[in-house]
Structure formats: structure tokens, C-alpha cells
Length: 308
Image (cartoon, rainbow, N blue to C red; front, side, top):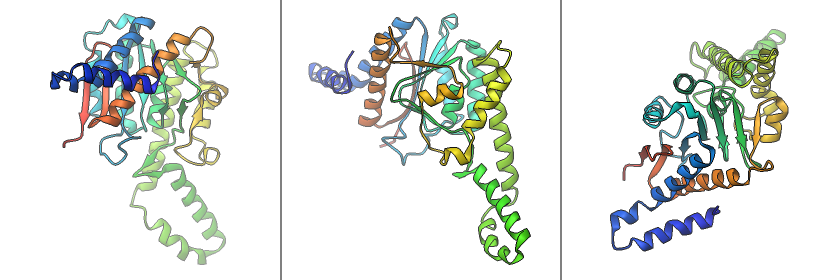
């Protein structure tokens, strides 16, 4: 299968070969991308939905996060699928809304039951990791990363807010004069913000624990214990240090997640196909006005583009 430069060359060749038909030439990235997405489906015999955000190439664009609008894209992609084939969900996202994530996972579970596998060619952070944890297994390569699932509100880490309040209470209890210092810090938070942080943590943790116990570890006697241990590690604010920490496949496997390795023996064709599909989507995001795509192996696509 072609690498990055070879995929780009294939796109350029298509443009050159259709130079006399500008409209057809403009479809080059779509034609090549859909060719390899279908090839992945033909190889696995499973439905494929790719969810790609352009957060790496277009970081300033609004709407890159996982949100409620994305559900429309998933509904389009699932329509007319043979659901008995199960589904491979390719994820490339910085994360987003917890509520939207729960809603999308609930919908996909109703469509495919537990027969969903996550594929992470490069990065699925935060809510993307939550979706991956809602699948029966996660296919990752040496270059793939998940991330912590501790929630952020208004780009502020919820665990960090709680720690600051606890530290402020402890220091002021010992030395009331320190209230002057902490007043400027704590005063920046809006009323009820602390309780919102606490509720977000409870909501996201309970959701991931439940998904792990009922999907990835379904039927295992220690499913709930495994789920609790994994959630503790994925929400370890002190240990992870930062919300955008990249967690590699080996560490994901060590913490207990069911990881399939792209580099495993006998996986050569699958590895090539997954990486080629990834190159195709990344080239689309980098070289067009597209900043989000949800697409299946039949060429049905929900595409968001920058309005030029």
C-alpha cells in the first residue's frame, strides 16, 4: 500500500489525468480517499466509519471538537449499512463535549450493540478516548495515542480547580492572612463553578466505567474492578500532569485496555490499509477547506468546510 508521498502522487496523477475536466479533477482527494476506505472494508468485512477532525492543520477553526452536530453525520453514515457486519470506527479527534459523546456512543451502541472496534491511527484524545473505551477493543500502532479523560470546563481542568479549592482551604485554615492571596485566585471562578467541575468528573468517570464494564470487559467476573482501575489511571491528574498527555499503546495495554496492535504478525495488509486511509484523510484536511469529515465505506460523507 502507498505511503504518504505515494498517496499524494496518486492524487496529483488523478488531477493530471483529468486536466480537461476541472470538476472531475477537483474530486481527486475524495476519489482516492474513498477508494482506500472501501478497500479497508473489503479486507475486514466490517463496516467502516471514519471520524476526522482537522485540529492539527486548522487549529483556529471553530467546530473542530466533538459536538452534537456530529450525530447527524453518524446517522448519515449508518443509514443503509448491514449492521450484522459490525463496525470499525476510525477516530482522529482532540475530544469535545461529554454530553455529545454519551449521546453518540448511545446511538452507535443501539445500532451495532457491542460489535464496535475503535481504530486510532494517530490521536484520539479526551472524549475521543472515552469513545474508544466504549468499544470492544482498540486497534493502535506504534504511532498511536490516547489521552487522559479528566474533564475540562471552559478550558480549565476540573481536577485542578478542586485541588486549588482544597489547597486554599488548607492554607487559610492554618494562616488566615493567606486569604488575601487566595481571594484573587478563587475570585476568578464564577458561582457554582466548583460544583459544575465535581459533577462533570462524576459524569465522565461513571460513563467510562460503565462502558468498559459492559462492553470491553463484558461477561468477565472482575469487569467492574478492571473498569475502576483504568478510569483511575486515565483521570490521574497528578500522574498525567497535563490533559493533552499522549498515552502510547503499550501503556494503554498495561493499564488493562484491550489493545490490538497494528504491527502484530499477520496484520501487514491491515496495517497498510489503516495507515493509507489515515494519509488520505490527513491530506484532505491539509489541502482543502475541509475541517471535519464523517464518512463510511460507501462514500456517504458528512463534511464541514471553511466558508471561503
